[in-house]
Length: 424
Image (cartoon, rainbow, N blue to C red; front, top):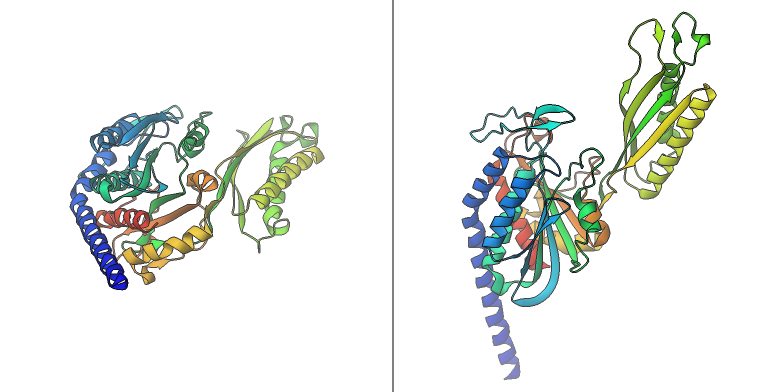
């Protein structure tokens, strides 16, 4: 009799769970129209990093209407909504970034962005060329779905709407790092954090994910080689910063090719700009250069910094030139926690099918979700948004003025977040 009762109780429990799942799945379907309206509004009203004032207000209003506890002004414009379920359970963080880019949109849409802003002293177009408008809309939709199903929610959800993922302007601080520095996780530290990003290099219906190191650490560097101006006909009368700069560029290539254990993890050191001189027969006083460093191992990152500093200083010294050199540390490596990945991958398979969850390999792009994943186990994945039937490898990339989002794919983002929370 006891066995029968236990089985009956289990059956009822299973039926209740099934009904709850059916209800929440219908809520996901029903939210699609609203989500696309939100996305289009945000797309038409993009704002640059640390300037997401209207965006954060839009999000705040939505979260408050859902009855969530809302915190604002974190890292200038960040918004966090707290939803406490009616049942005990873990605390999970779901994150979306909000900022747009200084890009003039060239996509033929009824809701094309015509916004402009001042960037580095120039008036430029502003566009959600990386899809952060979709991330915000997906998370707003996810928040509404769970708010409607609060009675069945086991635990607490933190909906993090983060500013300045693309980098704070000038000397300002910002983004995930500043949110954490201002105490985001002090009073409520989640057991895990989940984040997603739309990606044009993957077709709709496909999700890209890999366990362990996923996206690169990124740093930028700037240096100024200071020589002594002289006439081009008498180079011995001065100190040539152009020749010195050329030697630095060539020598820096040996950092990856000869000094880095690339079998441990790949790395890239690239120069992006060089400026010096104005006339063919005048050797200038100085040359300025800037570049980027990408890698997937923090120890290797430290070694690259050290090698780069040594080469810059010693090559300059060998040419009797002076040098001003600075590395601006950016985001650390984005690492998907292996234990969390193993536990939660089956949840993604439920939504996309196992064959449609693909490993894209290491990605040399960078993401400041890495700061959250350094504090708690993190899981970050890419949502395909290039229409099926089109060659995703030739689709305009994220940050392109032609960047295009296949809107029906966005509901997969909501489904993924909901499934991850339910299964966790």
